[in-house]
Image (cartoon, rainbow, N blue to C red; front, side, top):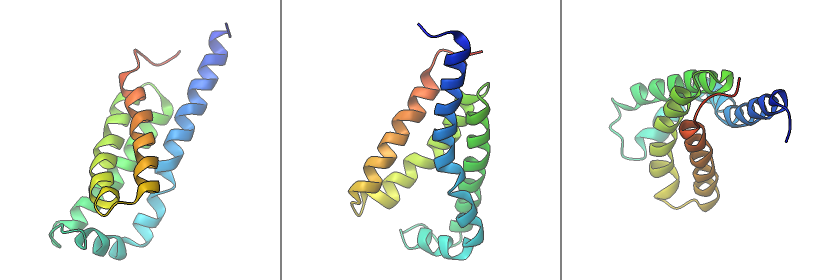
Length: 123
């Protein structure tokens, strides 16, 4: 059985990989804010609500990724990322069906669920 410091490193690498998916999504949501708002509105979300939802999404992505990455608050971090990811998956990838994106997001939801339900951070 590997030593605890090995598990700590493996745990960090897993959280880094999971967080990276969300971190890389943030810059384009900021730099293309207007276009992302249009995309959100195009899915039936009321236009006046779309900018606020996008700001909330960006906040969930940034704060959730940081909390997940640094581990001691991984459960709130995973929760914030799930708050972003579940509705995004349903609204943008399930209807209309986009199988690749849908199944990738389901995998991320699974990973975040594992992070959320783990007994504790490995110290």
